[in-house]
Length: 180
Figure 1: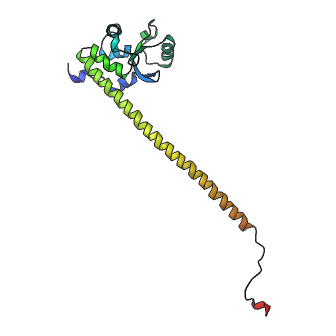
Figure 2: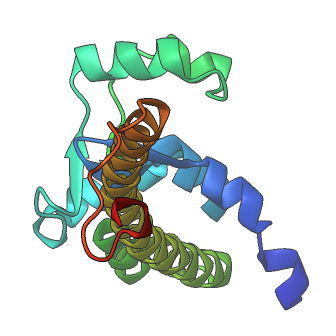
Figure 3: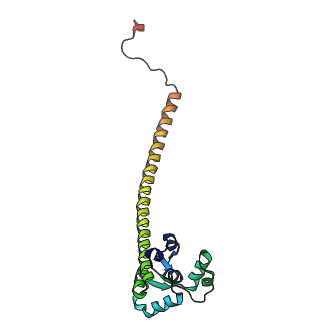
């Protein structure tokens, strides 16, 4: 097989990443499609090597989580929606561990690609966090400037009010030529 045939478009891989239990994960059925194996075979391989997959690498969705995912997500295959078994989901580390139990050339190349995409997403999230912090700093500065501008305008209004009310004439001091 040529390397071009092995790779999957980045957009397809990204569309298969979900945010469940506060982490980015991929469903077993999506991984099976990407690796070009049956979901049943993938699950069997995982169960045979269950010690390689602690809870932070892989977990099984509850029925409630699965129902929520089905109702929210319209990109799931129709056959998956009616399956009685809930899917396994794999975190980035779980996908990396998958390379140790699936030995096909395609699985290895797709795995490398998935890990690179997870890394890109993490970097994008980090970059966005930095940008968000900078925007927050700017907002705070603008809020302070707004308050300062409000004070300046209040003083200007007071000065205008004083100018509109004429002051009583003041008694002149010093030399007065009229008084001679």
